[in-house]
Amino acid sequence: MDYVRFFSIFLVILYHTPPRIELLDEAVILNLRVPVFFCISGFLFNDDRWTNFWRYAWHRGKQILIPYVLFFAVFYGLWLWFGRDLLGGDDLRVPVTRPLVEMVMGDPQTIVAPFWYIACLLTMQLIYYWIARFTPRRWTLVVCALIAVSTYWMSWNWGWVRFWNLGNALLFMPFYAFGHSLKPALERLEFRGVGRTLGLLALGIGSMVAMVWVVGVKAHDPGLYSLLRVACGLLVIPAYLCVGKWVANRCGRRAFIESVVLGGTIYLGLQNYAIGFIRIALERIAGVGWLTDHIWMRLVIALVVMAALYPISAWIQRHAPWVIGRSRSK
Image (cartoon, rainbow, N blue to C red; front, side, top):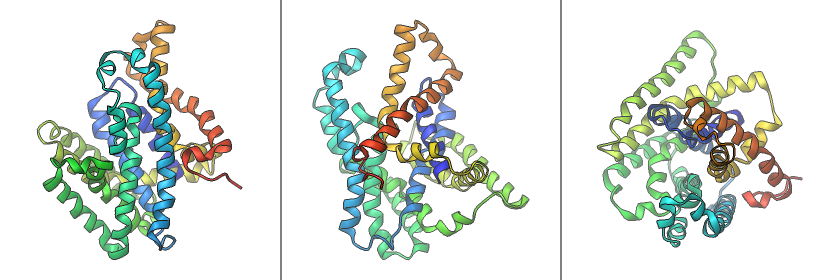
């Protein structure tokens, strides 16, 4: 799972690195980043360990709310101090109170946009706790799928579902249920045997092809697009997990991989700023801003961001793990 999460963190950074390529981003990378994170979180959920809801809520809230508030506070202060002037354009017209409202709503788009994911995850986990408690494991995926469909049909225009990404939490919950309810089967999955390998690859390719078609739905029905995206994402997960297991079997345990995964919140919080800094440096300092228009440069910048954030993440994990809601390792 560490390798799978590592690849997904890299894909998140690649997704946020310009220039955008609609079919690659929406039809391929999108299927391999957010869905897999939710699935792995469900895979790691241990309902036998958390028999008390409030203890579970405290544990998850600490791991999510501390970095959520801290990262927002730091970058909101920097944004007020000089960020709006540095970026110019639309940022100068954004009211200073809007980021605060977004933060309270659980969707801090102006300051740390990728943190919509951890807000959504917290809401999803608190809801799923009760679903798992009162629903047999073999039925949780069905229940969550019905909830996702109901979310599309009933609530896309209800303002309250934006609070702490409740709408997205209900929509994407099938991924969490997929990882939790099918954990034994997912643990056994691997590329063993020609038939199984071809079947898994067919599922993965079918997911990508279906997503290419689904992209066309987005313009006239965003809600249906999101719902179909969930279905396509579920198809690709088995093959993607098998790829991660195949790589892990050959590469073994790596401290670098584990460090990146444990510091995933740090990469989420800093990635957009690191990407922006590199682009500004290339344009205003090196005078080669035109390079960022090349597709191959997108991969280079994403790799540089991963490397640049690693020492920051490693330092925080070692000396200030409370920043990401964790206790110091013994």
